[in-house]
Length: 66
Image 1 (tube, rainbow, N blue to C red):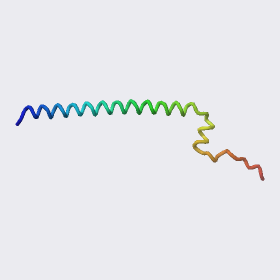
Image 2: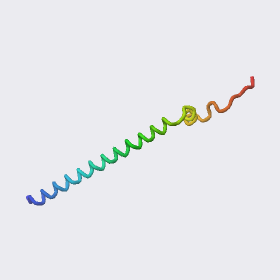
Image 3: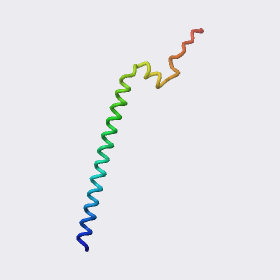
Image 4: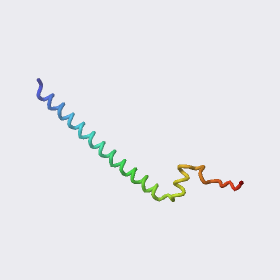
């Protein structure tokens, strides 16, 4: 068993694990920022616009014929 090769492989595996963890942390951070931006955008919309975005054909016309 080559101790030097084993040491290099363990070091490489540890480095890859650290890189994966850093990428996952960055992705989580970016996702949180994007979600916060979307929530802020939704909160800034007037309620009527929100309803029309969900049901665009409801309340647009009023039929007065009896």
